[in-house]
Amino acid sequence: MSQRSIRPRRLRSSPAMRRLVAETRLHPADLVLPMFVREGATGPEPIGSMPGVVQHSLDSLKGAINQAAEAGIGGVMLFGVPLEKDATGSGATDPDGILNLATRVAVEEAGGALVVQTDLCLDEFTDHGHCGVLDAAGRVDNEATLERYREMALVQAASGSHILGLSGMMDGQTAVVREALEGAGFVDTAILAYAAKYASAYYGPFREAVNSSLVGDRRTYQMDAANRREGSLEVELDIIEGADIVMVKPAGSYLDVLADVAATSTVPVWAYQVSGEYAMIEAAAANGWIDRERAIDESVLAIKRAGAEVVLTYWALELAERLRLS
Ligand code: PBG
Image (cartoon, rainbow, N blue to C red; front, side):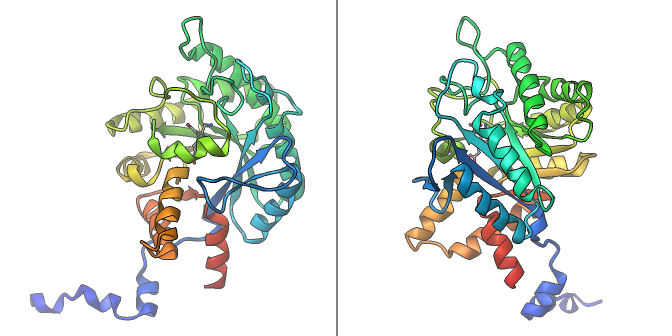
């Protein structure tokens, strides 16, 4: 075969041809929409740093979740924004706390059509803004935090959450939550372990979305951006501890970690395209510096190409609706 006969451009020659040979596709069912629900809100309230994303009231959540189900998206991930915060994040384990209320509303509205998932972490509920409780020296106390996660898991499962999203990065959290669920008979409640979660500047806009009170950073529990191999260790531990699904987060700047995990994981691999990834594209598009839709599609496609089977993205609804029209 002469070299001239090898022409990769052949398979790029028309839109139909490109569509046929595409190695990766987006589908509404592969998308999960993160949603914020704020205690005391009377309607959807915009989040300045995330144009297009809102903090829902319990009531506006209903319409939004039905819209998500109608668009065919795979699921939603709920975050609660309480009015009151304290040192132990007691709102997180109050059965009538905002996140647990929102879970019941979501499951009742659309729990048969999509998968309702909940953030299992204390940072939205603590007055210091950390993902765990603090010891006398002000450090995040791993073991004391696990006790809180155990309680939180049971309340969330009892509220009807289908998948618990363990995003706190405490050592042993997956094992503790699995044991608690089994012990209480919640054998069908799945665990999504935010296994390789990095301490990232890209969470910036999320802090506004949940009215975070964090001072300082999360570097003693979330991973260091410099480390790739450690991502595989975190995933391995979570699988051993009983994770049903593992996640890499953020997504776009960690595609190498994602590809590593996708190559070896024995459970599904998801990725979270976080608030900063969203805000950057929206901001550039608002300035006319980037083609908004193409940038969105490319950013999510890249995450799937690297190995994520499901992507959590704030564009889930828009993408799903666009995919159904195409
Ligand atoms: C922790 C949590 C965070 C995000 C999801 N779960 C914040 C953090 O770890 O600081 C960030 C998501 C985003 O930026 O979109 N509850």
